[in-house]
Image (cartoon, rainbow, N blue to C red; front, side, top):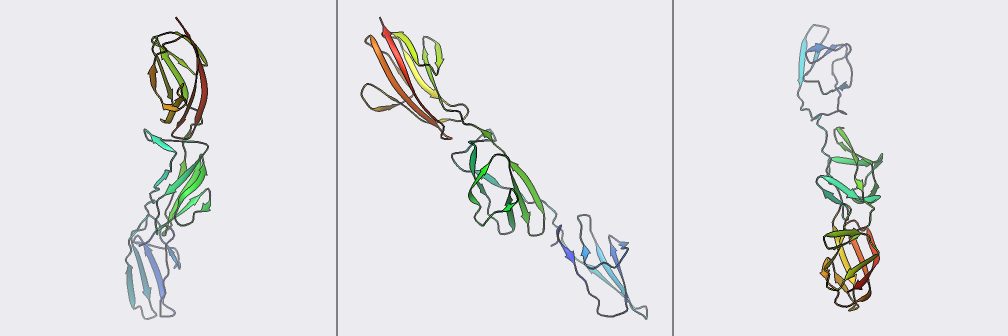
Length: 236
């Protein structure tokens, strides 16, 4: 098996013989040694002629492999892929396929065995090199999502985003939820009058007038966090 870095070394055991090398049935300009094999090389013949015009020919058999290796990688959680697009924070943890026949390079530095849990930044260059010298390079890119979840309050058909104060009437339905910028919400809770954290979304009504303050916290799948308060003024 030969590839981009392959060389054919040859030796003739009869001094003084004239040696011709035919590559793709064309006579080479010189009896090069070693013979460099390219992607276009299909046939190599070495012809030797001694002082008595005795001639011998050797047809060199070989199989070519000039195919670029496949780069197989993914970003580890909490990074997430949505519709074939990776989303992560400013840095991410990289995992590449382990292979005994492929060497990986990240930004020009050779990766050690295992190739898992490697911290990288956006637009890093990943290169794979096979034993035969075939190479492929890919730029690892993702969309950065550093946006915290948003609080949304809906009442009477209207929605309010990141609102801090809201006046409603007794018995008026209110829906509280948190939404992510792109990725999904992992955890969303509010701290109510019963002095414990309860899950969101939540639809409820107030049955008495007064001032009520709720604490809301949420995090998305990338770890972006929200901690906020909202004060309700309840009237008749």
